[in-house]
Amino acid sequence: MKLLIYTPRITSRIRYIVDYIFRDYLLFYCTLTDSEDEFRTSQSVKLSYSNGSPDNVLLVPQHPLLLEDNIKQQEIDLLDYEGVPAFFAVDAQGSPFPFDIFAASFYLITRYEEYLAYTPDKFGRYSPRNALAFKGNFLDKPLVNIWAKMLFSELQKRYPGEVFPKRKFDYLPTYNIDQPYAYVHRNVFVNLGGVLKSLAQNRFREAKGRFLVMIHYRKDQFDTYGFQFALQQHFGFNPCYFVLCAQQTNSYEHAFSCDSRRIKKLMRRIKSYGKIGIHLSFASASDKASIGREIRKFSGMIYEQIEMSRQHYLLLTMPQTYQSLVDSGIKEDYSMGYASRPGFRASVSTPFKWFDLSKNEKTSLTIYPFAYMDGALNHSLKLQRADAEQLIKKLTSNVKAVDGLFISLWHNSSLSNSGSWSGWRAVYKHSIEYADSLCEVLE
Image 1 (cartoon, rainbow, N blue to C red):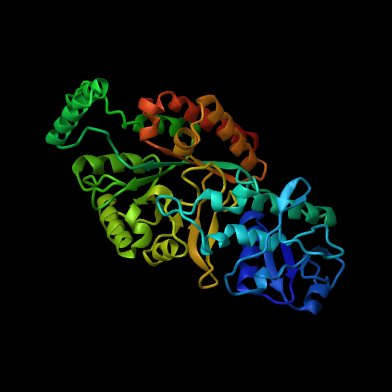
Image 2 (cartoon, rainbow, N blue to C red):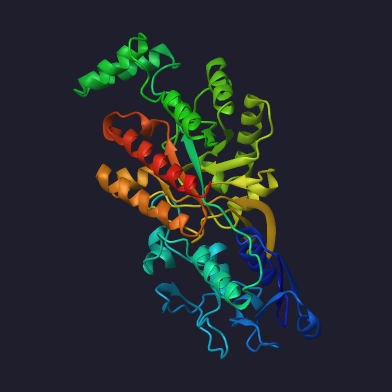
């Protein structure tokens, strides 16, 4: 279906958000025009993005944000529109919308607020407490998609004879592998030292468990791959794996021998069940050279060029981290989310191209936003397992309501069913079963 949008002045910001909402998300064939004559004579489905329509068509009122080319503090007052939050109010007669959907969507999806001054958390990250979505209590909602569906509904009302495209809800499980194994494939002296340290600190169960793994009497607790692979085969999902390949051990990560025979064998197993990308180290967020070294090493290990990434600790610095990823040949990044809170960091549930506000241009990097990380539920929010299941169900349902892509983030270690993760394997299994049930509705 063809859609023609009129706006008095076409900017890179307008073109970007129109492309995301209509082409990438709503699946329309969409063009922009600044010609009133072309707009009036066209027989296409039409929409006007201005403060006065040149024709009697659906009007979206215009806020100045998308006509600007700089980055500055924006005045934002939340309002309620049909039960959902909105902002960038514009008084435009003849429009069903009291706010600029395009400008508000652009502000959220580009992470405009992360380019402004903020107080970072202890890891140097942008904290969800700084975010408008957190302050406005809509972090659990893919608000950009909700607004787009409202826009879609208005177009359907005005063009009842048109056949509109239809999206489908989907689910993508992703895994971070910070440590492939807890104890096996380590130097024997390292393991013996660990046993002695545990004994000295009266952690006898831990010492016993480590020793039993060392002598191959018990399976390594982080070796949860068989469980993962069985789930993927049963439900038919194609997961993404992100493997840490840090160059050195520090307080944030443990380096391991990425090029060892056993690790390479594990990588081959993983590749047979899903896609594989790199989990870039903590240092890489502010060091372009580190990104290049880690990608080269990991590409050599798996014998293919790496094009997918996720930052360790989800540490993103705007725009430097993404600029470095683009320059290093990364095509897809899966870091868009918070480590300490579930929800939608960019208020969106489907992939989108990264727009570099510092250069005011759309880039080739595709961002895949995830809905929650396991640690946010267990360690940050300290939820009981039943409460975690209900929260995951709510987030999944919110994405289903907008026919989005639901992405979860788990670790091989958190599926160990041991220690602080005892019983959490059932939480994950419940979540994947629920997501699958929603996918089946549309089949």
